[in-house]
Amino acid sequence: MNPNTSRTDPRILRTRQLLGEALIDLLEEMDIEKITVNRIAERATINRVTFYLHYRDIPDMLDKMADGMIAEIKRALNDSPANPSPTDEYWPMMVSLLEHIAERGKFFKVIFASRKAPVFTERLLKLLAELVAARIEKMESGSYITTAGIQKDIAIWYCSSALIGTIVSWLRNDMPYTPTYLAKQFALLRPH
Image (cartoon, rainbow, N blue to C red; front, side, top):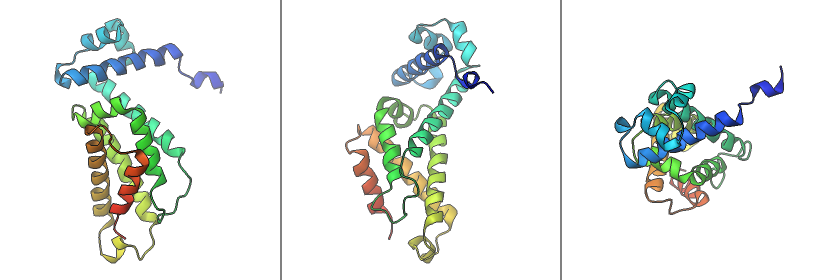
């Protein structure tokens, strides 16, 4: 396989970036139902036909942007320390996640704090549930969750929902705490 065939043309990436930025700008101003392909194309300073070269419609665009968001988050998480202990002072992977969110503050604030595009929240909640499940699996058999008789699925639902709710509140309040501090606070809230 030719290594160049898997690379996307930089012009395509740039056009998608312009379209994504245009959508985020419009979401700051109005509800998703009022956004049209024409408005996105006009804001991105491209031709409407160009939009359709990349996406079928706005829901397809949101879906592909959500896929891209999760792929970026997973890349950021892969940069976090490998095999951290569940008894770590704080969760290094959570620091990586929060740093990634902070670096793209405007994007995440608009998509999560505004509740205008639920596909993003659903995808992040699914990813957080996977991370929480992996962390619970690493816990010893004498951990609080097992000794208290808490069902794993309930613990996963509860913890992932609490995490996403706190992250959204953190964004709505203009990220008043550093990612590391917030991750340490999460660790303190964890039952011991």
